[in-house]
Amino acid sequence: MLSIPGVLLSLGATLFLKEPPRGKKLTGGEQWGMMKSGILFTANHKEVKWIIGFTTLIGVTSKIWFFTYNPYFELVKLDLRLYGIVFFALNIIAWFFSRYAHRISGRFTERSILILMVFLIGLPILFMGSVVSVVSVCMVFPQNIVRGFMRPFFGEFLNRHLNSENRATVISVQQSVGGLAQFVALGAFGFLLKSWGLALCLQILGVAVLGLGIKAILKYKKIFG
Image 1 (tube, helix red, strand yellow):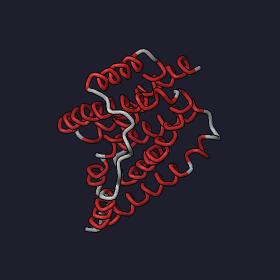
Image 2 (image 1 turned 45 degrees about the vertical axis):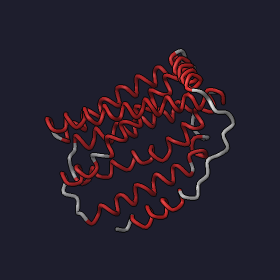
Image 3 (image 1 turned 90 degrees about the horizontal axis):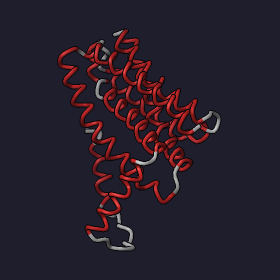
Image 4 (image 1 turned 90 degrees about the vertical axis):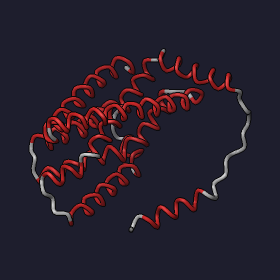
């Protein structure tokens, strides 16, 4: 009930949006040609493939983890009155690190931030699966540090490593790959969850993201120097 006014306000706002003027109308063949060139550009650049792979890993893992919050809270019998407080705190943390992402990233090297993101995702997931307790609920806070920080950080990351002509193409491919990966990963996790239980599945997810994340960091050093 409390969310209804916000939804109605957003709906009303969309009625006043206007499309920018179209510069050029493309034929179906021209649109296909642009898509093809974008896919070929992505396939032939190691830097672009790394960026898409890493952001997909972090994004998909975060999405899966988010959907385990409520089942985990129920599993450890967290007081229902604390649910709202926890989610309020999560959004405040995400807001803070999104707001000050540029200032924070300026104090660390790019590689150190990437390493930190992997461990802020992987280790808490592994801990929650290994130590099933109300105390482990606090492990969801690091993930929301990454949630708030990653979008502005990777926006700057793309600006540093790609020129303006190819940036939009890479973002489009990135979104497509990420959506497909989420579809597959959520289905697979749901299947494992039914068979093995939440705690074990969290352990598997934590080990997987740590392993893939460390492998990606090692490749980062070779690709970006």
